[in-house]
Structure formats: C-alpha cells, structure tokens
Image 1 (cartoon, rainbow, N blue to C red):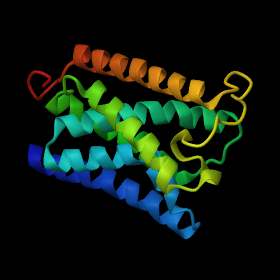
Image 2: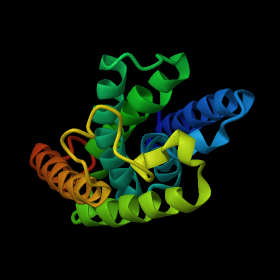
Image 3: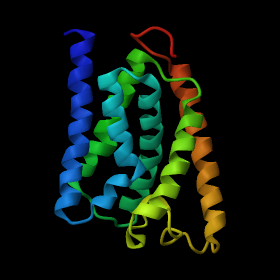
Length: 185
C-alpha cells in the first residue's frame, strides 16, 4: 500500500475517532467536552496525517500524552469509563506515533504545544460551562485542592508540568527518531 493511502486511512481513522466521540457528547447535551485537549489532540493528529503536517501531528501527540495522564488519573479516581474515549485517547495516540515514525517528530513542537495548550486553557474559560471545568480552566480539580488552595498556583503548576512533559516527549521522540521517513524534522 502506498504511503499516501496509508496516510489517508490512518488520518481518516483519527478524524472518525474524534467524530464518534463528538456524537456521544452531542447526544448527551454537553458538546463542550469536545474541547478537552486530548480530544482535540486526536483531531489534530488526524488532520495532520491527512495533510502531511508533522508539526501539527507532534502537537497532537503532546496534547494526547498530557491528556492520557489526566484521563488515567480520572479513571483511577472512579471517573466514568466511556467506550469512545478509547478511540480518541489510545487510537489517536497510536496513529500519532505511527505517523511520527514515518514523518518525524517536529523540532520545537513542545513550544508550539505549550502555546496551544495555554491558549486552549484560556479559551475554555470563556466558551465552556464552569460546571464541566474543561481543561481545568475554572477551578482546582477535585482532590487536588488540599495541595493547591489557590487556583493561580494550580494554573502555574499545570503550565510548568505541561512544559516539562512536552519537552520530555519531544526529546524522547526525536531520540527514538523516525524509522522509515528519514530524519526527524
């Protein structure tokens, strides 16, 4: 199968994963949940694979790495397990890794991911309902309020932790390198 066909199938799958999860949230009457960084990360990966944009895919992988950590903590704390979440969290990440192995992991993508997640955090505070706390834009997540009694400190912690994670993911991905697509870009 040609590389272009592979990109079409895998990119389309990631977009469809996002759309399947979108249908669930729209059906539940809470479409704002689609703005979680992890769900958008899957969509970014899908669009990037279809359009052959390594930087955009790398940003999506960063957001999925962060989102999967938060999702795991959410599930471990008794959060609801939703079948379509596996598609966005796991499927999107696997497709992003597949693409990075072929197209490379973009240099400096950690900064683009950090700028994007910061903008998304602020945007979430304006366009999503406070009750949903999308991208932790309104308050300290339940159970963390003992550690972070002041929301500003929590936000700064999230920013610093995201920067450290994104930097580490990029370093690891670039060290791992691309297997079939030439040098990482």
